Image: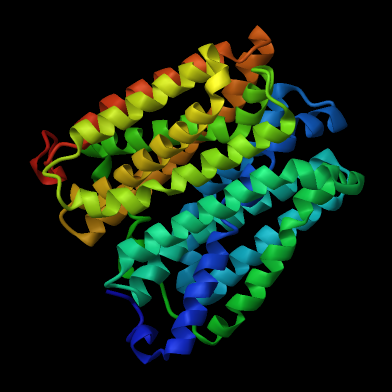
Length: 405
């Protein structure tokens, strides 16, 4: 149920609905690529500003910290300004951050990256509420569609960033900033929605009031499943090209494989969403996928010549565990308020845990001067993810867990 007195979805024409869907896909296109596009050119950025690996890891960690801090504020912004204007603000922030990459300053690069993170956080939190409002009977289809769009745009950008940087010696700075052209187009496509000022759904606002959700063991299982999955995923998003280059692959191929990782992470939604309805529980499925991700991490270390297989499979397993974890938020709760509270807990702690990944990976690489320890860390995180995925995949709810209701 929305706070707004009526949903505008019932009043939409076919044309306005099409424009809305197009706007949602354009927003989705901006929710991953501006952050993950850094990884293929990270070595060039390190050389340009003489950064340590730990300092470079901060470039992908800053957005995650922004996610954790800004996500609870997104609902308050939407309550005051409405969903449509808030999403427009999110795009403006992303565009501002991308434009700042034209400035030859490491401080501005960090600030711009944090601004991008805030914009993406707002989009991540509010876009599902918009879909729930206007596509109540097609939530699964719309969600998997916009997640797929995130993966395709993020993956394509990662694959093209090196050739783009090398084109007429454009350089990494201009290559990163060019994504702002798509953001500008997204702002134009979203303009027709600004005549509306609908409020977010009540469950989204209630997600900032986390009640006693922290007392439930099952809530921690789901939170740690999502957090550990994001932990190793963002290590890969940040450092996979560098890992691949150390394994003997060219910078261009490393960028393509990182793009393949991102695209494949979006594909599980097409398979898993219809499959979930047929499973009594998801223990074995979640456990197997997370364990396979750990195996692929070690495959990158010990059999790097099969990097194509490891990268695509890692992306698929990462995306599958993420979708399963999000599904558990609904499957393991009794009502929308409990689900919103669990979502807030998982989102806050999950992003904070994920934020440590790229920095820790950079520090380990600096200490050992190779990626072996990092890949073993990813394998360990995936194994723990498998354990918590097994626990979270049981066909029980928070009420029936061993913790006090």
